[in-house]
Image: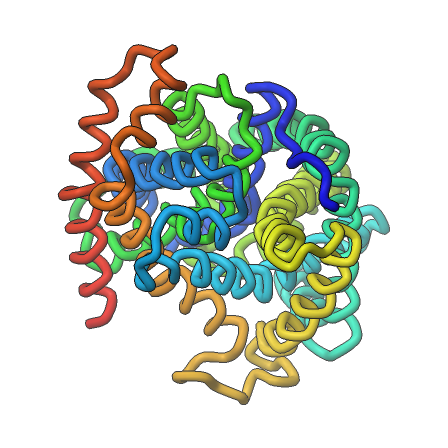
Length: 450
């Protein structure tokens, strides 16, 4: 017999856990390099609009599904509807979460390895070519990428084996405040570098002529990725929410805090990038090839390098906790497995398919020559989720909540059974999920096909 389903202990635990799901490598690794590739501040404005108009409403839709059913993503959808098209939300949620973990654990492994490299002082006195060669060394071959990927997976699954309160909640309560504090420290240090203002201007002064369809597509894809929409993460986490938690307030706080953390990460990176004459358009290698180089030139830089990659490892770990919990909840509730055995299955599946991503991530990787639709495994997992699965699943969630879920369930969850007087917000939310979010998602999704 399975015991009573766990819940988070308080509203602050709910907020920190949900924020930790959104805050991860997306903020410190993906947000800076995508912002750099798409014109800086103009991209951030576009991204913020996507979060406000589409991200938050769909996020609230997932909250309603999760807390309203108190089930994992597959079980939640199954209990709400018999329509096969909507049942695919649960299946796609599990698939997208798995795909993200297949490539996310690779990058997390790189981050873990860079923490130890920084502690050993590997980056002291390095020039650009030396730092680039270290990244190549870390991301190619067989033993190094697979070993660090496995370490990252084992750490997260070890925490999840302890459950919701003793595992996820305890870890996020400790790591989230530390992460934000360290990130602010790095940003302040970066802002005092000579020529740092050029990086601030790049990040905060928009040039709207740079906005095009590619920028909009990237912004929407990142908004879905950053808020974990379509992955089943927010449905799973909200199923552990307390009954008195204010869902609209939590959604807004998480979206604002997540964007704020991304901006702080940008302030930690771009002023330093411009100060040292580096390229903000360096792509995925921006974090691994520029940060060690930047900090190696700053007094006390070796300590800063350790701090920066330590906080990045914290962010990666917390995000992986939420992703793995989607799979764990489905395994424990649908297949009636205990949490520890579920972690064994997680390790085998994610390591098995994720190893393909680890060995193909670098252009000179062992499996980089094998292509799926013109993409290596690493890029295929990434693009398949961000450009296709997440928007499709977000669209299905919007339609399900907007048209097919009983309005009483929506009102009950948004008002906490009438205790919060925001019935008007329910009407706005339903209108958005019926007409605005689906249309905008469809326009952008169709645009991505061409």
